[in-house]
Image (cartoon, rainbow, N blue to C red):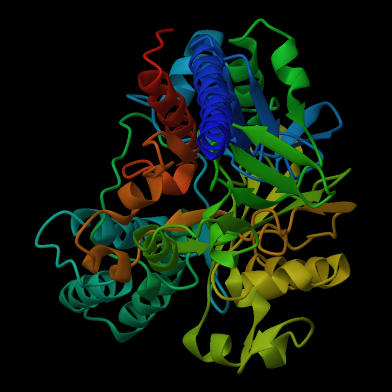
Length: 501
């Protein structure tokens, strides 16, 4: 009797085990037939991944977007009959640039050749021939030869610049002016990289410039055009229905067979795979909880890569004070005045004796939109500038323009409206784009390549994948780099399932 009972128990256990195996096999077969993918973020990388998956035949795709809009760091806002870009603004290059390739037949990109003139706080406008000779020092002594991997851009360029200035100008006044102009070049580097200082940026990196014009403007259409173009590559309207807005992700759990994504509103979404496209700033903040914890090598990559911010403010005028010949103004401070600028203009943020207005690189017109000026802010003041009131911003910019342009434009007026987005303060971004640090270059492997590696499940499947500009080894800090990364991760899943477009 005991033997029969034991035998019966074994039969029941075997039956339950068989049922479980059958369930797992069926689940695996269903996954192979119709894998489900959750994409976190509806920016350029997220939309690119979603549309590419659809092309590969993967239809079970859900995109979760924390904002109430799509686009991510592409943020085009309508103003009158035009769109202005609060985020990404230019297509950088043509050859091997996916953005350019997607829209070149539409003939909508325009060359933006505007270059701001240099204006000095004490002198009149800096002589253009003098300014050109200064720029050539940077170009000729660029970042190509004899690069030492442990040097920062600041150390490298300061050294060659000072040597060139000493060799070129003998006059004390010219040499002083040349040395004061160095800060403008510093700020231009910060605008390109988003770092608080050029002593944070590695002179050695893997960035590859796409040949062709580097500032291709969208004119009155806005960069959001590229998102629309991507979405139009998928004629199935059901895909846009799977883009869910106001879904702030707070947790990603890939410890089981499937991944579970939790949002701040309490909703949960389950998928076979997750593609994480949020910014490096969000990853650095630990706002999203990962289970299991991210591998240590990925945590090191997140910590070692840089992520900074550039500020952009738009000024709208119903009646403009500048003429057609105005290409913009970049500000060169007298070295004595910059040190006491907080006394000269005490309103708003300050550090030591310096006012926040010394963090304004330039004020330039917006191509194709005649009544708008854009103000570019860089460096360590940007987070504090974001917290300043619109009135403080307007007063500071008016002080700059009236001080530096007093001879050429004596009738500068205040704008009718101001428009900006505070990227550093926005918890869904916490900055604008990534940059390469010396710390990241000292590590054995490319940290962007490490960041792009998927986290595998127990069965070796790519459970948690990563996309976004920071995961691009050669085109980081660009929209085309973000789109390429989204395509890359969609193709990775297609290869895993041996799918073809």
